Image (cartoon, rainbow, N blue to C red; front, side, top):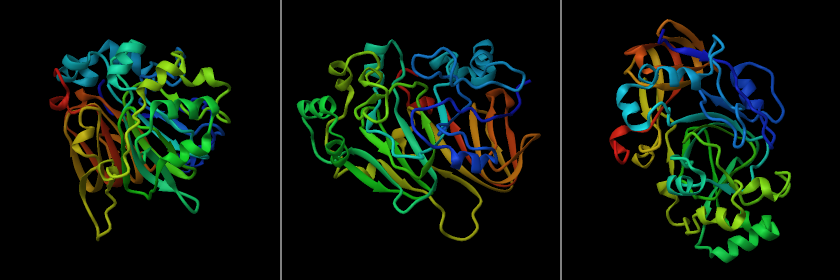
Length: 339
């Protein structure tokens, strides 16, 4: 019953373009305005009742399967801390155009204003790029006053907002940690595997040209309240703490590469697995994204583009073949306050 399960693409329609890189990885057809594939998702789009949820091959929503057997899917220790909550959302995200400048609330803000224990800290694993200048924009370069941010938003001064951020050129193998509150944007041609807390909370500073109107951008709170979640501190001298280069540039490599710093542990974990033969997976709820090659997860055949959810109760599972995969897991429990 509790065996690894391959999941089909799950691309709820978004407000921005993209999806070709997802189609190329998976071997399917590109869906315009399908730039995000929500993998093993128990999360819905903000304000929606079902859009975004992943469905298992038997037609059951993964969310409902987890609620029916949380220990089997997540493990007793995880359940003791988070209940029947995976505490994780994984996406494939292919930016077919630059995303708007936006940020996400913290746990404390979400608890106070949105009745949710999770904010939305996230991390990006760059798995491909296209175009002449694949760039992400992260954090203000210098401290910015609350009045200045409010003025940028009210006047939709796009140039000033983007110019205030730190542009960072990225390549495959780079990872970027994006703590809650950090204003950011992903540039055109950047293809990532994104790990995040399981919410769809975004405060969109730059809504004009992206959203239907300003009311869509502030989570129903009004911008006066929503902008309180913005990290207005300058990150220009501290970008190194957010960015990690993980690409292996030597000869043949077998094994696991940890992709994030310890700052990510209270939110999620990820490693890149280079398998030539076999690799043992310890018991854990996990989401696997196969980037290269083919093989199997337990008895389940996988290939480039496969996305797989692994229940905790699958136990020790062998990953065999010749392949490269990203393994995504929930928070490291020892790092979570109150666990």
